[in-house]
Each structure stands twice: as C-alpha cells, then as structure tokens.
Image 1 (cartoon, rainbow, N blue to C red):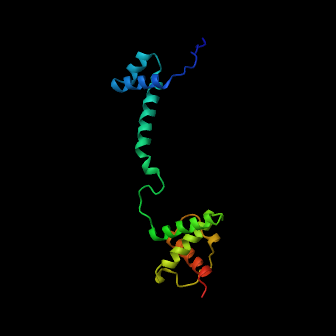
Image 2: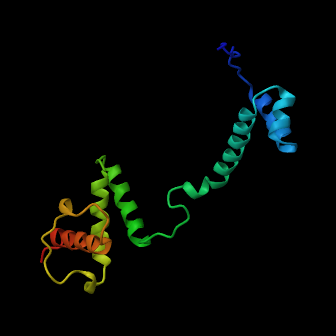
Image 3: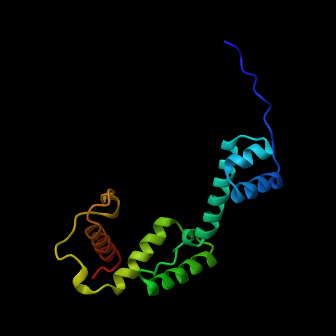
Length: 153
C-alpha cells in the first residue's frame, strides 16, 4: 500500500474566506472549491459559519436577560432592586441566597392571605425537593417558611 502524501495546512485570511463564500453563494460549493482550489468541505463549513453568524446576530436580543418576557412581580422587583442598591451603598455583600430571601419576603408581604397553606409545613428552605416536581407547592412552602421566619405574630 502506498502512502498518501498530505499537503501542508493552509491558513486563509478573512478576505479570502469572504471571497470564497460570496462565490459559493452565487453558484454552489463545488464550483467555489474547484475555482479556488480548496476542499469542498471547507467551503461548506465557511458558508455554514456565515449563516450561523447571521442567526446569532439575529437572535442576540432573544438571549438577553428577561428576553422580552413580562416580569412576574414587577413592583416587588423594583423594591428588590432598591434594596440591592441600599445594601451596596452600605458596602454590604449581596448573595444569591440573600436576594432570594428578600424577594420571598417581598412577595409574602403582598401575597393574598388565602394563598398560604392552612396546615403548618415542616419543610425548611434547605430541605425542599430540587427535582422541580409540584413547583406550586415548593413556592408556597417557601413563602410560608419565610412568612413564619420574618412575620412572627
């Protein structure tokens, strides 16, 4: 069996790639590969990369925080942001857990009285299931735990 001699690895500038992609879009990948003397697979990869880049630019807005969705608790989120700014002005550290507890306190203050569970829950925040089953019960038990902790009567 004879050994196949491979060519050296080539490096192409952005301008060269753009010219190849323009030619490929005007005709097809096979003609562009033959015209410029490069592999057809490389031309198809460059064309695909251009299309992905275009899609990324088009979808960039949809990946932003919030992504155009309405806020669940708009008033509470404004209050949470004000609380966050107060904490930072006082040079206090704000953690994810602290934000979560503060948000739960704010939601518990404005929640309707009939939304809290009637029987006392023995679960604490650290013992809640993490598999996402029965999300409503998890949220309500969190609110109940926070309400008990911060609103002692």
